[in-house]
Amino acid sequence: MRGPDPRTGKGLRVTTDADSPPAGRARLADVARLAGVSVGTASKALSGNGRMRPETRQRVLDAVETLGFRPNHHARTLHTGRSWTVGLVTTDGIGRFSTPVLLGAEDALGEGRISVLLCDTRGDAIREQHHLRNLMDRRVDGIIVTGRRTDPRSPLRGVEPIPTVYALSPSTDPEDMSVVSDDGNGVTLAIEHLLATGRTRIAHITGPAHHAAARDRARFTVELLAASGLEPATGRVHFGEWSEAWGRRAVEALLRTAPDTDALFCGNDQIARGAADALREKGVNVPGRVSIVGWDNWDTMALACRPPLTTIDGNLAEVGRRAALRLLDAIASRPEPGVRAVSCRLVVRESS
Image (cartoon, rainbow, N blue to C red; front, top):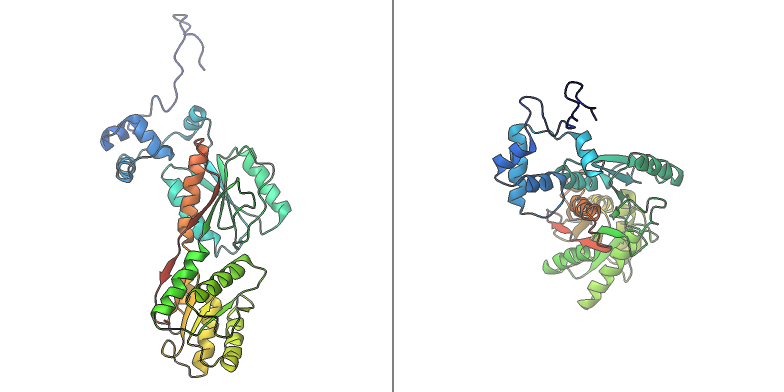
């Protein structure tokens, strides 16, 4: 703050870059004028606060792009008391599952020009606490927690004042905010697709029984088949590994014990690709004699499979986007506790 004018003795008004932008620098009022909205609406569109029509927000973003508007981050922080940063904490060092979640979250947060700080804990509790301390020191506005599995996880400790949303891996605390992929919906899409194509001897090959994803998908599969008066082709679910090698071994056993199997519903795309390889090596036509459906819509596996793989897409980018929107609501003092599920998508290719 500047002191009195030595010539007049009168106080001088405190100014910031937001009040007096350099010559040629666009102001928020310029953005609002070009977008045809009020300054308040323009501010809400950029901060991500408040609800408005998508086309209104887009007009503001288009005006920002046209004018080259760049908000003064320091002044914005002082004015709002926010850091305009969000931490994304993940246990998925490879990024196979957390990357789509992150991209979805960034799509939602980017509209408000909020930065995302990615912290990889590698599943280590000590490393996680280290990252959380750093995020708190940076005074992040909120935290999104994600991982590589759908198993519920313990809530973060010591960050209670900071709004937190759990994405893909829900919190065990029902009062927390969690966003997950709807496995029941995904299984329904897969089984209904196979039944609609005339398949009735459907085998289910999946991952380790101690993983929630494998257990849940197996349970839904058995229930849906039973609702149609059917049971798994071999009378049971085949639990194993999330690997191509397991898919190949499982097919060897299936063809011996249930040679009339006409469809495989696999717990992930790796298992499905291994199964497809084994069937091809034995001269079994896919999808003529046996149809295959996988899970994940992992391009590396699904498109390299021969034939290309029909699969369930868990819609992870949408999980991340909705987690970010719930976080923004919580930051704006509108938290909604509980678990919200995002519908899956069936991606049909030549294997079915």
